[in-house]
Each structure stands twice: as structure tokens, then as C-alpha cells.
Length: 142
View 1 (cartoon, one colour):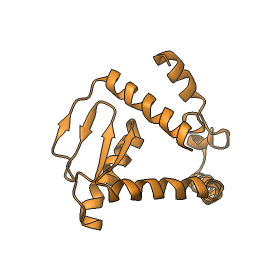
View 2: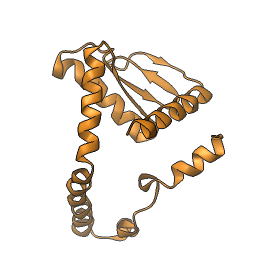
View 3: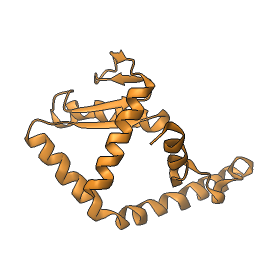
View 4: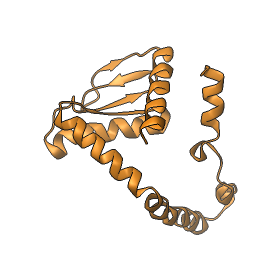
């Protein structure tokens, strides 16, 4: 898949679109803003419920990877990358695991320390290649 095709495919994801229910959120009074946010928050458990079997399957695969010495790698760009790094950095103090067991990757760099001390640059081509392999593996295994 070419870079353009990958970008086109990803652009159709719901997470990459604008929410019609919050298009005017910047024009609303504070109470209406928090009501709209609350309404959107209520949709999360319903969305999660629809994919519980897939979540359980992911948990099983991650658990098995841990059993054989593997690790969990979060990958993302922008906010999703930062949240992956944040979650990965919380695993050592919360669960007493090695900082190498759960790792966060963010577009433009790899952060491997719970204190975010170390940043290694990753070429964009390698990130795209890795994403292609992962999405291919996900589609074929589930």
C-alpha cells in the first residue's frame, strides 16, 4: 500500500473526522459545553460494549506475549502517541514491571523511560512500514 493510499484509508476513521454534535462548541456558554462533553462521554461505554469480544481477544494476546517474554507497544501520533507514552510510563510504578515491558512509540520519536528521559528519532518510512505490518497482522488475525 502506498503512502497516499494509507493516508486515504486512515482518513475514513471516525477518530479523524469532525463531530457534527460539537461543531459549535466554541460558541456555547460553559454549561452547554460541559453538557455536550457529558453527552459524548455517555457514548463511550456503549461503543466499548460493542467490541468487548475483540478487547478480550487483545487482552489474551497481550497476556500470552508477556508470558513468553514479549512486550506491549503503544503507537500513535499527536495526542494518541502522548497518551500511549503516558500509559506506558505508569506501568512500572503501578504494576511493578520493567520499563521495557510496556513501551510508547510516538511519531517522530521513541520514548522508553518512565521519566521520558530518552528520545530516539525514528524515520517516517520506518513508522509507515511498521504501521502497515501491524494493520495487516491485525486484519488477518482478527
